Image 1 (cartoon, rainbow, N blue to C red):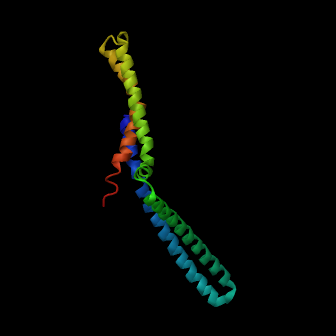
Image 2: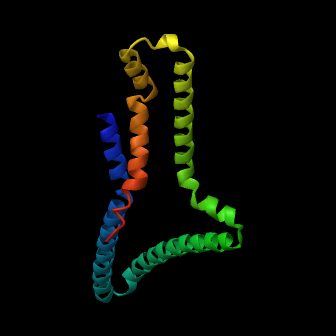
Length: 167
């Protein structure tokens, strides 16, 4: 049961970036609308009160420029990384592309190694297995629900996200 829940959790978590992107886009549009309304109100106040509100309008514009500058800096950093990777050797570019899955590779390899060792240990000590119930008991130890939950979550995350990106 826990394996099914964690697999479902991995699948849902793989779609989390798209969901967050949706809410971020919605918040950005709401923020832009609020800024436009605020600017309209301030311009009306500016004409009514003179130049007293001009400093506040300039402050709002400065904040907008700062936000745009941050976005441009992020874009520039991504472009810089792309340029560096163009000059890097093939294996380095490939490895950078697999940084996130590397943790998954290590976990799965560790899982396989531990399970192979435990299986070998049981076969090397036949006195531990006297009946089918013993085999089931040791299989539950080797393939524990926690272990299968982690593996199910990883597989759900990596392979479940394929449908989220399709439009």
